[in-house]
Length: 538
Ligand code: C2O
Ligand code: CU
Image (cartoon, rainbow, N blue to C red; front, side):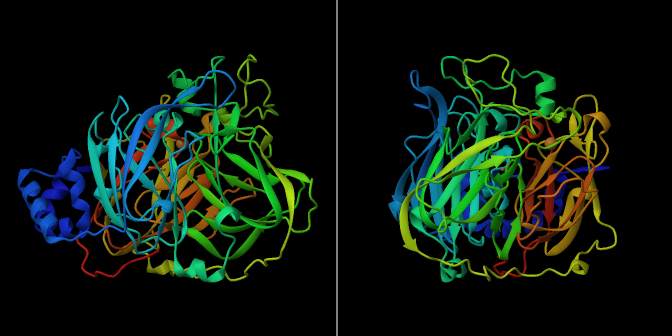
């Protein structure tokens, strides 16, 4: 039987004040239009009290605007996009890196422990809100769709960076419109550094390269084309025939003969990449969603599904100037309707050609790497990258009875356990006690002909993948801390989550953005209050 948040909130009313304090610096968002239904007038009063009580002194204070704009992607007509634009009000301007040639939002760089304030103003002609994908922030700072603001309105974010060093990102999260807004250009990287990472001395600055991979479709006038809204296309998810890297088609990365850190984000709506080096050397993986691994691992190829990040150590020191290689996406079978007829698509003339079709699972080149400069700088790959706090599985309160989440489809509707998203609804199963650890099992075995891959993302917490079964593919990188995990058809994945410190409502959903928009998303509610004020840094 389903319960509703309003009941939960009434129940935990006595904890509310503490909740607000906890959410802490965070409460400001509510003053500026992001007024959630969880909060009534008297609470608003409490919030203003809380604000005067807390002293949030940001290390970085920026204004972030979502707005219509245009970029020159192809010769001829500029492409109309939506983009984030930042201005730094306080703090180091070099920490916010705008990409003037790209529709992508600025890269925001912060150090663990820093406090940041983002004054978000929505200037696109529909509701929006920003989610900080992978960041561990209080519920009201997390960009839940109930906090959307309309055109001209603002939402104020204030939070402390509790995450480990890693490659995180931000994007809109209004219910039903995340797909088109991300597609329109609203997304950016959020890079966190920490002392542990600094100490091992990885390649930095120009040798630390962010690479955001996305697919897009353009018409003959260079304008973006999204799905028609037809149910079948939504069921599959949007697939474009141009592979963009950092917002550019036909991307080439010029490099020197030395080691690089490549940070890859799959920022696509629904396309999955099976990454490999063209020259067949193995990929050396040093990090995943929640930062550096304990030690590097190698794969011949790896899957990167929407929302996931992976960090690669790429050493070009034994190559000669002029050599060219590339990162490819190898062909793979996804089964069912997701592109079962594996195509060997070619990226030619996508704009003008007809009948362009690059199904999920098609093979193609993603970007080229060209050695352009000799540099004698040998840097060896550190064998100990970071410390990963172990969580014994039997510490989970449901160690013997993992919660089951079936990825389900009924009458052309993707859902989780047969339920679709309702703004404030949580089922019994979706309530967790603060300060506990739980095992959740996602199960993608039920779909028959309609089977599709689903990348499952949890807000609020990084988790550990503790088991994957029914596996038909290699190439998973389940190591380290994760916030998004891919389930191919037939697979089951168990994750271990520590619901350590932040109470409130958070989301989990399929990160195929068309699936998410049609409701393959649910809330979970962390109940109770946080008594230990330990900084639970994952
Ligand atoms: Cu990257 Cu709920 O999303
Ligand atoms: Cu899905």
